[in-house]
Image (cartoon, rainbow, N blue to C red; front, side, top):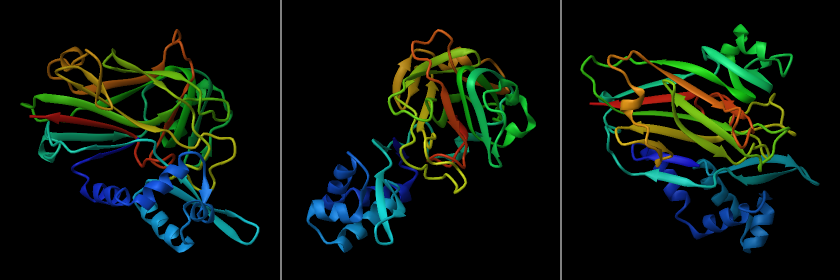
Length: 307
C-alpha cells in the first residue's frame, strides 16, 4: 500500500497526476495480471510505443510502477511491474500532523534491538553482506547486527527501546509506529500467511496476518549485489497508531488498547516488540527491512503527537 498524507504535497501531486489519465489507468489494469514490456502494452492498447513510453515515465516518476531493462532478442527491453495494490491518501490535518512543533519523531535502525528470542529459520543481511552462518540465533547478538538491512526469523520476538524526549508538560495524543515487513517463506511465496504481533510496553496491540513473502520483482531500493532469483525482495509498509480511543492498523481500529494502557507517568522511553507467538495459527515468520532494502527508505519509525 502507498500511503500519503496531505503534508506530502509534492508526492500527492505526482500520484494524482499519474492517475488522471485513462491511458495510464488502462496500463495499470494490464499490469494487474502480469509484468509486460512497453511493446506488449502498446499492442494491447493499440497505441504508439512512443505514447506508452511517455505514460510509463509518468507512472514511474510517481512511484506507482517499477521498470527494469532485461535482455531481448535484439538488445534490451523495458519491462514494467506494478508496485502497489492500494493507494491511500489521508487529507486530514488532525492531531498536530501539520505542526512539527507538536511532533516527536525518531527512526530506529532495525539492527538496534536490545533483546531477541528467536527461532530458525533466521538470519541477518547487513550493508556488507550476509552474516554467516545462517539459521544461528546467537548471531542476533553479533556486533555487526547494528548494520542490519534485512532481518528474518520464523518465530519469537525482537525488542526495541525508543527514547521519549518530550517537553515536561507534553500531553501525548497518539503514538505511531511504521515499518516495512512481510512473512518469511522458503525462498518466497506470495501465499504464505503469518500472524505478526506487536506489543508496546508489554501491552499487546494487535496481531496482523501478513498475506505472504514477496519476491517476484526486485525491491525498488535493492542494490546490484543483492540476490534476485528466489529471494525475498520487498515488504508492505504497515503503520500502527495508539490513541486515547484505541489502537489502529493502517487507520482501521483493531483493538481497545489505549494510551492509558501503555503509558505511565513521566515515562522516558517506549519498549516496542515485534514477533510471532509460539501458539499463533499461522507461524509464517517475519522479514523486517531497513532503509536501504525493499521498497521504502525507512527503518522503524516512531512518531509521537502531543499537545
